[in-house]
View 1 (cartoon, helix red, strand yellow):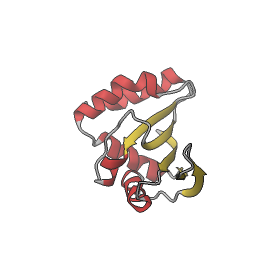
View 2 (spheres, rainbow, N blue to C red):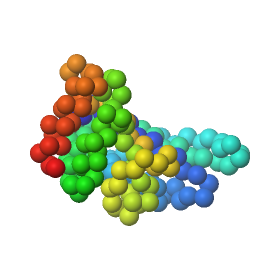
View 3 (cartoon, one colour):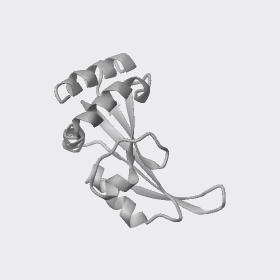
View 4 (cartoon, helix red, strand yellow):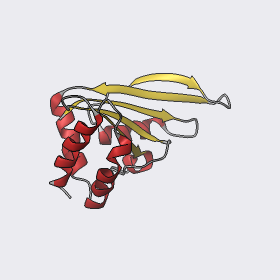
Length: 142
C-alpha cells in the first residue's frame, strides 16, 4: 500500500527542537531524522529534520494509525485526495506540530507543520489509480 514515507519538519528559532522531535516520533516512531541547519529570511537559524521510512512494517503501522483517526478527519482526507496527490501517486499530508507534540494526529493545510510525502503503491503509478486505491481503503473506515 505504501512504498515509503519521506518526512520534513522545520524547527524555527522560537521552537523547541526536542519537543518537535517528540511530535515527529508520535507520527513515525522509528524516525531517525537527518539534521540540517539553514538560515531564514531574517537570518534566524532554522533546523530542518528530514528522513525516509521504507520498512514495510513501519509504513503499515503508519497507515493503521492514520485509519484510526476520527471519522470526520478521514472524510475530509477522502474529499481532499484530488489536491493532495500528485500525478505520480504521491500523497502529501501535513500534520499540526502542536497536536503531534500532544500525541494527537491532526491533518492541517498550513505550512508550519510536519510534512509527509507518502509514495502510494499504485500500479501504474498515476494520480487516478492512487486516488481510487485510497478511496477504496478509506470507504471501509468512513
